[in-house]
Length: 431
Image (cartoon, rainbow, N blue to C red; front, side):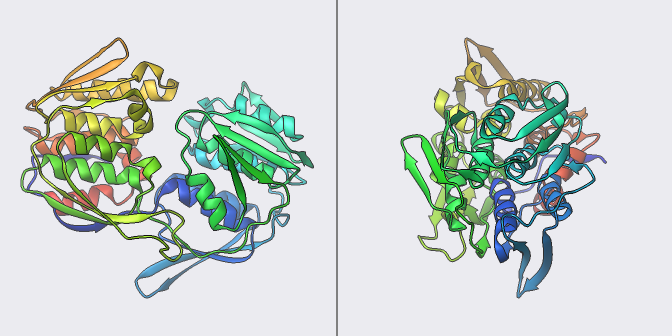
């Protein structure tokens, strides 16, 4: 499946985005533990969210899709936290780390045996840390090869734990296990400390306490049915914001986008680069919304280089490829500090993005833990394999909107799998 872009007309109009993926996974899993029906509006797109749905269906959770006016609602019909049924088949998490982590936490306290597997990429994701925590709480976790999927979990009565984890995915997994543990489980997240996990747990009525960086949940707390209105995915908004900033004459509005301040680092960076972005918060107490939401209006602007701190680089790591693409059109140097401090997956992402930008004709230099992009640069389209990372591939398509010649991905399946409607909407807006 070839995907291509070329020098574009202005992006003008108003669009909505698929629901936030991180919140989509959490809403599905927490809804499955309720005794009753939870309606989810605006569920995220892509194979990773679909993987969570399919695995929960195989565990006996019922789901029904219906429409109310213009809104499509997924009704998740749970029967309580102990109602899951053992699946004789492997639970295939595809290449979704979120699916695998949440299921490990969910199944650790269930009185049954579960087998989890995934795609080629997921089988390379190290799970030693999370497995060690769950074993310490009383579950049995056995790997078939090394310390990655496929694996088997034998659930058991769990005991509480006090642990520190690497990221929000692990935090969510351990908090889920904590619901089935005796006593209070305390989880501290290193580094970023996003609060979207806590917000979603509380939205489902699970009381959580904050103590510094640690989040505490008491075993036996029961999620309550909830109506969930998921905001547009803030990560996906970055591609549209960068595109509208770069393409002359653009004026694009994105509606009902997540506005959690813990997740807006890329937006702050674009602001400092001179992007014309108006944030329009909707205010508090939006019915069904677990996080603050708002609209973003982005107009084309003359971008300039900016200094990006190590903390910002870490918080915006998933958006770095498209930020680097935008920096090729900025006047001066944009310096992303702290790339050496990123974890292994972050380092791989930065290398792949730097390779792409250089191939397009951009000026990129990595030295002493600082990635520098110098602009403005005239980019030249090229023909390349998309690879498996949609973040890099989508950044390439955005860069193609200001390039001389055509930017062509010879196999764009990773883009379609991650954000099925991205390419068609991009073409409709600007080609």
